[in-house]
Image 1 (cartoon, helix red, strand yellow):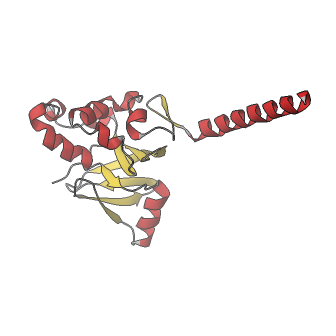
Image 2 (tube, helix red, strand yellow):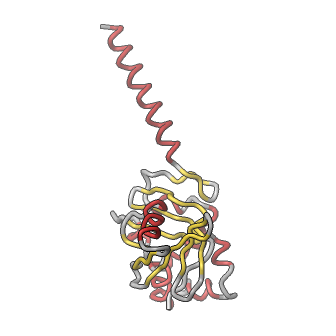
Length: 185
């Protein structure tokens, strides 16, 4: 009986160890922090030092609860350097309470309903002859295409964002890190 208890405990410990190792391998590092597939978009994003501006914007726009929701959401998440490319004063202006609706529009333009992996997007590009158009939660459109080995997103103003880190899986969707803020008309 003692041996059976020990064996059961050993199997349980091994299972936990293997499960944890497998789980850790699925996490991607973004902004110096691991992004765990068991956490939602907001729970992961708040730990990325490369997304502090985006997190501040999500909070100011009142979208935290939405992005913690069931989803699934595909988020094209601009890094801080992407916000730095905007004209001087743009971010502080957007973060003002009186501009909440405008900020919500900018942020929801970076979200597509569903769980779209990079492979899904590339397959859609191939199927559609070199580009793929998706409707955003904001109601606008994004166009996807390949430029060499890079997967790029083109906004309604013709701006391009390169996906620099793809397939950061979340419990309620997926994040693709982008190097440019996407703008709608």
